[in-house]
Amino acid sequence: MFSKSIFVLLATALLQALSAYAFDPSSNSNVAVYWGQNSGGTQTRLADYCSSNSVDIIIISFLYVFPDNLQVNFANACGGATTPDGTLRCDQIAEDIKTCQGQGKKVLLSMGGGVGTYGFTSDSQAEEFAETLWDLFGNGSISEDERPLGDAIVDGFDFDIENQNQVGYAALATSLRTYFAQDTSKTYYLSAAPQCPYPDASVGDLLANADIDFAFIQFYNNYCQLGPNFNFNTWEDYAENVSPNKNIKLFVGLAAAQRAASYGYVDAATVDTYLTDDILSNPNFGGISLWDASAGFSNVDEVSGQNYVQQMKAIVVGDGVATTSTISTSTTQTSTSSTSTTSSTSTTSSTSTTSTTSTTSTTSSTSTTSSTSTTSSTLTTSTTSITFTAPRYSKVTHVVTLYTTPPLQDGAYYTTGWVPQDGQYDNSKFNDGQWHE
Ligand SMILES: *[C@@H]1O[C@H](CO)[C@@H](O)[C@H](O)[C@H]1NC(C)=O
Image (cartoon, rainbow, N blue to C red; front, side, top):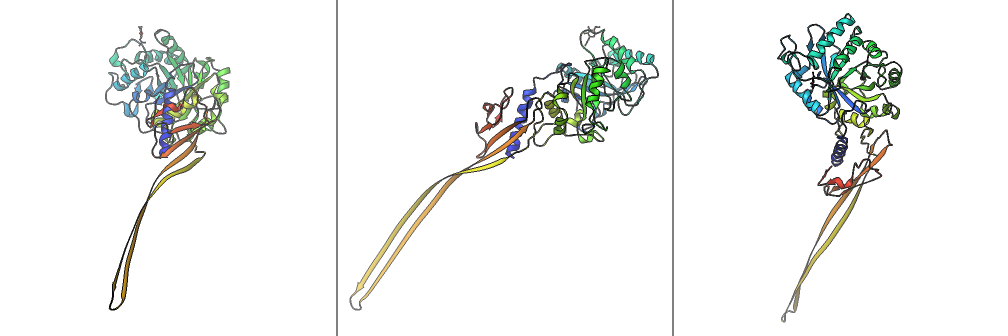
């Protein structure tokens, strides 16, 4: 019980140490989460997720009917109101997009998805649709009440095309770039979400012919998931030799919980194993993308208290997974005792003698009372070793010694065998039974 709470404290300290990370498009330690389809069954409003330090990019999903009868769906997060054109109107999401952007997060609108009626019949139809997208979701000129997300301006578009109709997307992407160039007040991004088999049957043409910033590659529901056939190196070859954007950032796309995929979900320790130093340091590695936010935030590791999104952030920044393997727990009991003995002895004796019949009777009674009380206090010391794997450094073992009886006191805590990095786990910060940063 007690050691569990110290794990949580350590995890909290680890997270606080991460709070300095913010979105940087050229970083290789970004975490992107899809949000909108409630794959975890626990979806709450968008702003609840982007307030997390572990999240850099949020891909809201989906714009799933286009180019005609355009429609969006965000599961339980939007319903009721519509624009004059009959598209859902999502004022709370609009508000939250601005909140997220204010926190330095990038919000992309994802087009497509596994279910939907979408696609183009020609490049020119797709090019025309670029203007519609720009007007409805970008910084175009259209009245606000016609925009599904009100006055919120997304940071770009994601192509999660899954219906194997590849027509027009490269043309659409190229055309969108011309609109992006009209607004120099901020940077817009384009991304695609291929399945891991290369080339992708739906966005392969787009990835080979357009300037795409991020590829959120789905390494689940496929043979090439994290396992013996993990094919990230194929995608590295694509980035170096095929992509028109040689700086494209490849994200390892993962199911954020068992229930978020048909198959291919792997736990954080497994992710840590597959994301080798070579991958983490590859110039085209961008980070990890997750399907989806609700699944990842509700997938909490019982021991460390970290959710899957936090664990992924720790992996991409090089801290590894705070695996809490208990290498050894030894318990030492030290007893101190004091003994006091009180003893009292009383003896009464009487003798009577009469002369006629010489009778002598002697009665004698002796009573001794003795009491011994012992007070003892026992100090129980429990030593637990926690291993943090840190791919970019080395495996480190954190030995925590806890005085479990009496309850934890200030300073009743020390570590050995730990090389602090960036000031983390400074013992002096542990006071009042909690960690102070
Ligand atoms: C939209 O574009 C206008 C210029 O037409 C610019 O002044 C403004 O900053 C842009 N707004 C945002 C939020 O990017």
